[in-house]
Image (cartoon, rainbow, N blue to C red; front, side, top):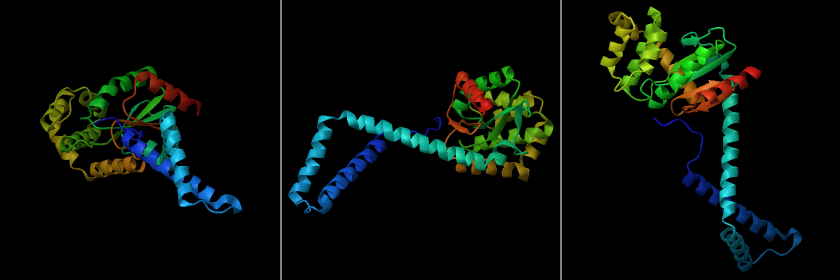
Length: 260
């Protein structure tokens, strides 16, 4: 799955901008028609005003690009503000859910929350950077949110990972599945489980536990509340970071969160 993004597609953005220009020109005409006590413009005069607006845009098409950039930045700012508000409101569920496995330092001063799917290529791409980060920075706490959105095998992988907690094998199982190549189906999941020392018979039994289903549903709910539409996605401090990011970006975000 492609990384989540808050960028509005260009055709949609352009259409919205054109609508805004139409509204702006209509407003200009209305204001001119009001005339602040002067007689209203005739239909011909209104057409002339619209023609002037159109002519200016045709002569200065660069204003379309400028306006799109301004609109995109405004929407990014609004989206970031909404995300921060949601993160603050959901702080306990995000950072302190006892059902969510944690890696790194459980008492770390900065917490990273990752929403991921074991079958997501971008999640696998960023996994080495995450592993390196928590290895080099001993004060990072990583909360992992199993967010299976790529089909039934993703759900099986998530259930197996959560069930592995009961055998104290979550960390090796997690990293092994993240590092696996090729198709990650049920057979491969169980092969990996056996390779890291899990009792696969017990694992299958534990996968059916109701609390595992509840934990996954809770993650779906969190993702919906945060408007997370793809994997991976990270919450660091009060920022929502969609998509695969490199280790330098992660270091920068951790440093920013650490400063408060």
